[in-house]
Image (cartoon, rainbow, N blue to C red; front, side, top):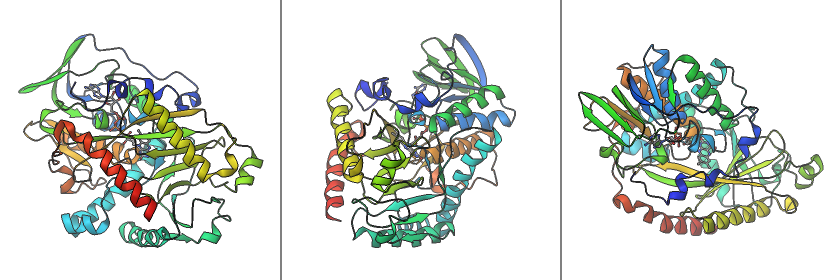
Length: 447
Ligand SMILES: Cc1cc2nc3c(=O)[nH]c(=O)nc-3n(C[C@H](O)[C@H](O)[C@H](O)COP(=O)(O)OP(=O)(O)OC[C@H]3O[C@@H](n4cnc5c(N)ncnc54)[C@H](O)[C@@H]3O)c2cc1C
């Protein structure tokens, strides 16, 4: 494998203290490793939301599908995220999207973002998934008094994008909304999206895919993909022959799979801290009782929500290495942020902390399209930390492409299908992160 993080990033160490495992009422589904040779119409590499959604879309169209995961379905970001379902697959502003790609494709992109949220809801309904849903849209809170103006402008552009009204929350209103914190100075409520338990969602999709007839294999890393009319996927325990292949590895990809897209994606760490359950008195003392999912206005943003069992979940970005020291340092930083945001909970233990890799693209827009120069191969990745919404949609989009059909329910702008740009630093691209994070930290402090 040609991957850009330390080996520890691809081990179980970062999820050793993951809270979601304790919420399941059964073991995580595990499937047998591939044993010998097999063949199918469509082979999928990666069993996160992208791969599972692609598999469900294909199998529901009557196709014959094999899904291979190096570890097990949900081992990647899909089993470790914060559970915030919201729009935001791109890091570009409306103005930049419209100036770069034109008004018509920008419109299609905003429609795609809405359709992506609808698809998550549709999967929950279609497979009757119990995923502990809560939150009516989300709130974005200002990390400084000056940042509130930026949020008002964001609310207006949100309304333009999605045709949904935003609501301004004045600083003095935060307490009435159950969002009292010395760190936040007003905010906006944005009405699209909801929160869920991401591992329960993942397990639900996995079981639905297996029940629908997808042949699933855990512990089956694809080491090589050879093309000779069809595809041969080489694994340590056998080979899969497939007519078409779908790459669904996102931040856990390897630069040679597929080679034409090597260094066209940048994995970035995201981290989550979870507290013990807070008592009603503790919630009231802090003045934080809201069940809304929330992000703050920092460039290195925090995302957080009070879980249904009264634990506070706090997510943050901004660490570059994956080592014992770095895990300890990032955990301490998360705790410092937690204490600053919720000073009345300084005595509250935070027993869970874990991390994983999200994925960025050079153009800051997601990709779901054909692999350049590999007819019959497709890939979807680069959801910029919003893959709980973007990945099921990306998977469905590449399944449609692989089936040679257009789905009227799934807007798919041309720029999402165009070959993504390579990162200039190639295999050394992670080196661009420390200066970027330092600049974002300074910017967040000054704004
Ligand atoms: C800590 C954290 C918090 C997040 N919070 C949110 C959030 O609140 N909301 C949101 O929208 N998004 C969030 N995200 C992002 C979201 O989880 C991801 O964008 C999404 O899960 C990506 O899904 P995926 O299926 O594309 O990739 P992944 O879920 O990462 O799956 C990739 C799979 O590919 C497999 N694989 C890799 N290489 C091979 C190979 N050679 N052979 C076989 N299998 C292979 C891996 O084992 C892995 O299971 C968060 C991510 C993290 C890490």
